[in-house]
Amino acid sequence: MKKLVETFKNIWTIEELRSKILVTLALVLTYRVGTHIVLPGIDPNKIEAAMAASKSNGLLGIFDMFAGGAFSQASILALGIMPYISASIFMQLMTILVPQLQKVQKEGESGRKKINQWTRYLTVIVTAFQAGAYVAYLNSPGYAEAILPAYKAYFWFSTVITLTAGTLFVMWLGERIQDKGLGNGTSIIIMVGILARLPQSIIQEFGAKSVSGGGGLLIFLIEIAILVTIIMGLIILVQGVRKIPVNYAKQIIGNKQVGGARQFLPVKVNSAGVMPIIFAQAIMFLPTLASFTNLDSAQGIVKIFNDHSNVWYMVIYSVMVIGFTFLYTALIFNPKQIAEDLKRNNGFIPGVRPGQPTADYIGAIMDRITLPGAIFLALVGILPGFAQRLGVTQGFSSFFGGTSLLIMVGVVLDTLQQIETYLLMRQYDGLMKSGRVQGRQTVSSSSI
Image 1 (cartoon, one colour):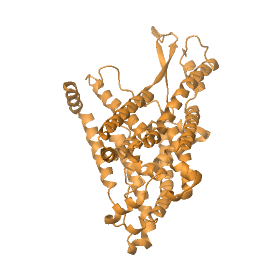
Image 2 (cartoon, helix red, strand yellow; image 1 turned 180 degrees about the vertical axis):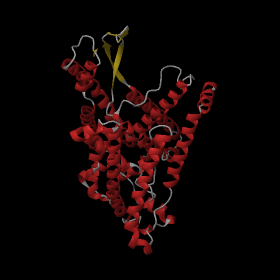
Image 3 (cartoon, rainbow, N blue to C red; image 1 turned 90 degrees about the vertical axis):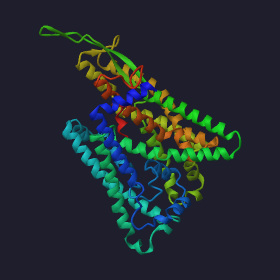
Image 4 (cartoon, rainbow, N blue to C red; image 1 turned 120 degrees about the vertical axis):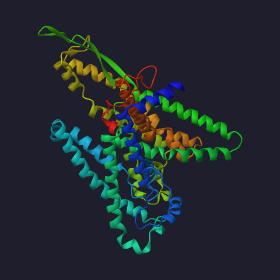
């Protein structure tokens, strides 16, 4: 306890770090206040009844989770940061697949600014499209009664404009956190939205287990212990690397000897990050769009794809996560490029010839470690379904795995790593006695 207090004191002593923490908290508070401001033309007194009448499952539940409940509350920030995430993912894939965009990306800071500006333009288009769909959702039974009759003529136009402006404001908040605050702004906003639902979910789960009888409290404590164990396993998955030894040839430059050092090439077990789960969820939710506003009456394959605890859903979902893990890893991880960079810098792997043999060696190692990582990632993705089948409430079961838990663990590790860096730069002790906190800085999807 004394060590913890001393660490907090050291953190608060560093003026730059203290300023970044305060700015981050202020911007996050601004975002949370915005999620409780209702859209123009909607009666705030009828929102509770509308939320009770409409059950946010499947795709709608994911949107509501990432928006911190703003989606179901008909807030001006109902769409949250998700349109920007969708645009960023699309642009990231395009920079990999389109050679012209690859050239722009390699232009350095100017190329990065161009791609960011194109991403913002695409965000406006995606947000306007999703805002139109959201207006249709608000006109469904439940929310339709909350719309003021005198405002219906202007509701569509004003809502699309308001939601688009709200998403751009959230995007701006994320960029300000990135520049002036601590951590990745977009990731922190997503994490805050997810964590906002955690206290209510725990209370609901505790209430449900208390009603079940004397053993309910014990079951609740066992669930908390399992959740902690899953989080520990996810930390191992996020931080797990395979170190490939690399030697650098000695060079004589003037009177100095350069090189000759032995280093390691870290290859992450989960290089794809959370992207395979996001892709799999996007594909799995497509059938539910056939019954967008009335999921309860859905039948057949639509019913299966909307039920996360369905056995067929979990089987198909697992296969898709494993497949997308290999696909996305192949897109972002280029063994040939790594082999060329090593050769250019006079580096080589002991016992392996430079060039194509090195690329084949690195690729073979990547394939071997990607398979267990993909299987573990698929298991994480279907854990909420297993928890729901074992009697955990739907809200609390979403924290047992899936996108939400993986994002939270990754963002917390990234933020702690930045804090530890500040401490070590000022010659303070780190956050941990043994080892250093490792984030996801080597994963290209860490911005999500």
